[in-house]
Amino acid sequence: MKGRSPEHDRRGAAKPAAPASPPPSSGGHRLRDWLIGTLGMMAAAPVIGLLAGFFLLFGGIFLGVAWQAAMKPLVDMRQYAPFTASTSGRIVESWAAIDFDPANLPAGKLYWDRASKISRCAVVEYTAGEWGSPLRRAFCGMRLQFSDNFRLSDWAEAVQEGIPFTFLRDTSGFELQEVRMSRATLDWISHHSPRDTFGMSKPPPTTALAALREQFDLPVDVAVLSWTHSVPDFPLRFDPKRPQEAMPARVVEDSHDWYPAPAILALLLAVPGFWVWRMGVRFFFPGEPSAPVLWVLTLLPLLALPWWGEMLPKLIARANRDWATIASDMLDDVTRGTRLIASTPGEAEFARGERLVWRLDQGAYADTFGRIRYAKPEPVPKSADEALAALRTQTAAQVRSFDSTQRATLFRRLREQYDANLQNVQRLFTTAAEDTLRDAGADAAAHKAARKFLIFASGGSYYEDQLDKIEVAPSSASAAPSQ
Image 1 (tube, rainbow, N blue to C red):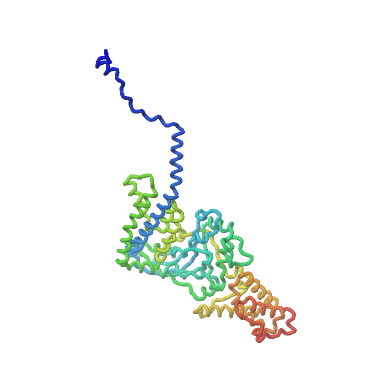
Image 2: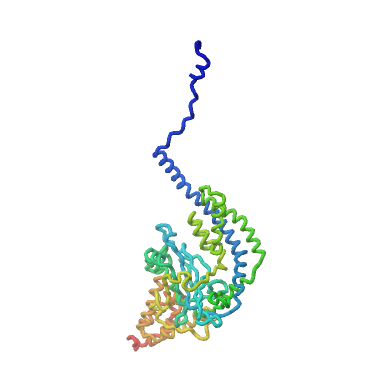
């Protein structure tokens, strides 16, 4: 344009606009961003927990196996090297510890038994050299999965392989089976129905506690086990400088054996196990921790490897509860042959827990089996068949002293129990019923009750014509009940 100097053009030219700064976020936008981030984390949490639990589980199992096979034997070898003194103790207290946390059971579910573990604990009293008063030491052994068909009488008589166990005995030589649990467990089973009552008594138990009492109420099984297994001694080894820390002799002897080949293989597992474990920790803390912090978070839990069976499931449960249950089961299998927790009696598992004791002369069979006063025979039965024969002989001898009314009542009650699916003791009374049929002094009511019991409720094969051959007609004088 004419009349305008270059100087004027330079001064009048428009300056380029400065980049616009973003407008300050409003409070509504910040709230929106926070909600989106929070909801995103909540949506991703199950997936993150699933992945973290998976990697922590398998990494932890590899590390646990490596510890059990390679490191624990070395630690035990060093720890028990000073245990040069020997003694023999006796079991003065024993129980089965049932570990169940109601908080781990989903709401509305009743399978508490399947969510429980059971282990045996014994308190052993012993003297150690010139030590003054007797000492006591508690031992709790391997953990097994509990269930509604678990029987204490089927359990091997050992806290751990090579380490003896028995329940205390009553005056008849029968075990007094005892279970201990937490107060929370007892409250739960006292106020919830059984998961399943199939095969149980009629009418069925209405609470899980009543079902548990029936589950272990097996007088004949327990009696046979008790009479064929004597009360064992408990061999111990200890450090003369610390006699109060005695250990079972089998544990100390096994610590002298260490085999390098399994240890090397286990350590080879530890290498991939460690990196899988580290991946799990990385998933567990998704907030991008710095490398030093991540290493600390990876290594710090490994200090608990000696207590891995208890610690690993608790850690994994924070990521995923299902993986934690699997971890607990797998670690129990890994440590089944080696788990032994020694402590003072007061620190043993559920030492101060709620106690349930099964006495054979009480319970559902109190008015049948419980009416007979048994005495352990001498010599001790060598087999289950010999024990059953001794039980039948003592049963028959005492029933012969009953009058006709008492016999009739007894055999009718045995039949009622059989029909109610309480069928553990009837086989002990078959000889007594046969003797009643041969007894002309027993009245017709006693004969009839004994006959009906043998045919319908004895658990054996008795027929009318067979019983006709052994029965002696009751005399007219026996029409009235004998006194």
